[in-house]
Length: 256
Ligand code: PGA
Image (tube, rainbow, N blue to C red; front, side, top):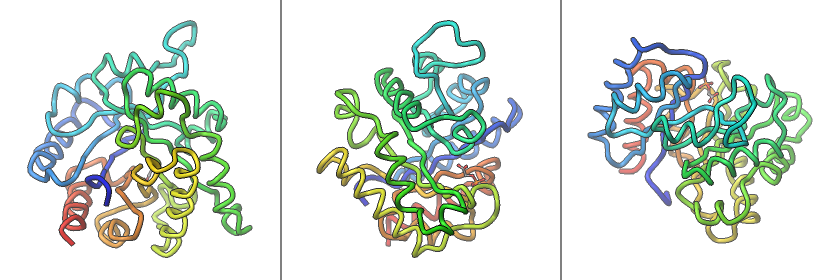
């Protein structure tokens, strides 16, 4: 694996200040398991409090606006995330693409804005079930990457460590239906090809995370799969009891 495995929890629209106790427990384990990079992306209102509560893990946003400031009611910009203490932001999650009509071009603009603000980015891609059934998964994901990956000087400067891709088949998110390891390997190989096309040799080192119903039971197999550099975890990141076995599986994968 080119870097430490990266295990990121995405709390989505869940969580409250009371849940910072879970984050502290996760952080204590992250401080021990230094072979694994651990991070959480809580909802915006918890970012600053989470930053104060933890020391070893990364703290991120789940989205950012592409502009640094202005008349965009309800939106939050990348410099604001950085100011609140975030180190990274997730962009292009399929729930944003579906709920807010985010296009590849918009996702790219958000990723570039994030990098320009000094944040790392996790760019999410993934096919729907209809697209997979039509044997279009690789084509769809390749096109999403070609349209969404950040470009320009800030992207080159951020390579490889501050850019990650999360491959998250839409049909596996929150459904309990995890992709077969063989399919994950095939898709991660396809993602790698687009990263190399976009970034040359540096694209070989960008971490590709798998996301979609990752849990304590399937994490070890997924994280041991060729080309899998970590996991983006939704439901199973909401408590330390559910999340820490995934972090431990990543730590064991580095010893294997
Ligand atoms: P899930 O979500 O682990 O609940 O399937 C993953 C994600 O959407 O990042």
